[in-house]
Image (cartoon, rainbow, N blue to C red; front, side):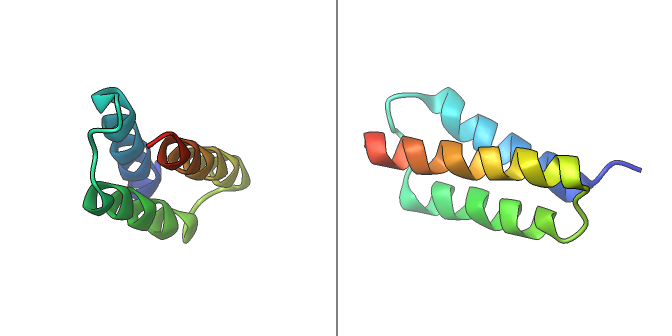
Length: 65
């Protein structure tokens, strides 16, 4: 069974990244971060690595703003 929270976290980050030019706001970023944190609960080791990469993407995007 696929971890739905993991998929939601990926989708949230992807939506933010696809907006480009930093047009997301702090609320968007917080929602993506919350989804990532929730996904950690039932994540496999492989999923946890991907979640860490998603968190890194958020941090890098924030630094570019």
